[in-house]
Every structure is written in structure tokens, then in C-alpha cells.
Length: 211
Image (cartoon, rainbow, N blue to C red):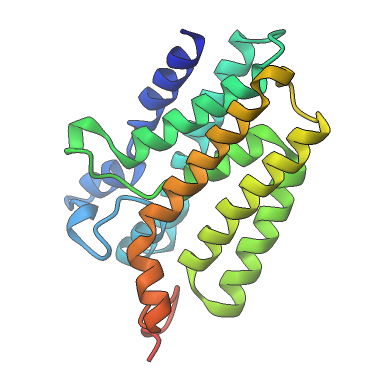
């Protein structure tokens, strides 16, 4: 029951669609432009740097708040970090599949950033370095995002096996499974980007498409 409540709590927070709401304030539906997503990258491309920053912060903070709430409520539980991860998963699900927008949202990477910060500063540092390095060198946000979620999963397993997180020994495999679901879902949401990366036609952060 605790797991379901944490998941639902996260989903409710995830329903705050920053990109969609910001677009509506400017009389557009962001999902009708660019990539058709309501996330940070599309907001940046369609509405500019200010929009991109505000959308990122909104989607990032809603995850941080959801995870913090669950951490406070479940404080003292031997598997509190598992419940926090469930809350993060719920936020990503709410962000990606908001019921009131016909389940058409974003790809969840800014929300994933909120999970990183809520879980472990070491994981955050590694993932941020990978993302910035990939984007600076290649200008592909999608590539950086895929690297981030992959590194996130690997580190959750590594540090989890060391016993660095508040997860009861009997819940460790479940903890790794939830982290794996987050990784697989993010990669699946980027499936079109992956096809374009393989074909050399993916959109770059700035400049024209790769020829």
C-alpha cells in the first residue's frame, strides 16, 4: 500500500505540466510545435531560453518536492529510499502521461534530474558531467539524456549493492527494478531520437540538422 501511495503522490505532482502551462500563458499549445513534447528541450526551441529555463525548473522542482514529501512522511522506514524512488517514478509517469492532456506530455528528463538530486549528490555529479559533456561535444540533447538515465541505473545498482541507500536487504532487487523501469521508460520515450541519431538526422541543440 505504501508503494502505491508514493507512486500516486508522485503522479499528482507530475501532472503539473510546466511547459504546457507556460505555453498556454503565451496562447500556444507547445505540443503543437517542434517535437510535439511539452518538456524543456521543446520549450527551449519553440519559445526561447527563458522558457526553457523556467520549464526545466518547474519540472525539476515538482520531482524534488514530491520526493522530499515522501522522505519526510516515510522517515525512519528501513526502505525509505525505495519509497522516494517510487515517488520519482510517479512524477515521471504523471509528466509523461498526464490523463487530462490525453496522456501526451514530455519525456521526463528534467523530472529525472529531480530524482538524481533527491537520491545522491554523487550520482547527480556524474550524470550532470556526462550530460554537459555529451551536449557540448555533440550538441545532441537526446544523446546526453540517454547517457544520463543509463548512468543513473548503473550507479543505483553500484551504490545500492554497497548498502549506501536506506533500502532493506529484501527490497534491494525491487529498488534496482524501479531504477531500471525509469531507465527503460526514458530510453523508450527517446526511440524516435535514437532512430534519427542512427540515421544522422537528429536535431542539434543549436544549428541545423546533422547532414
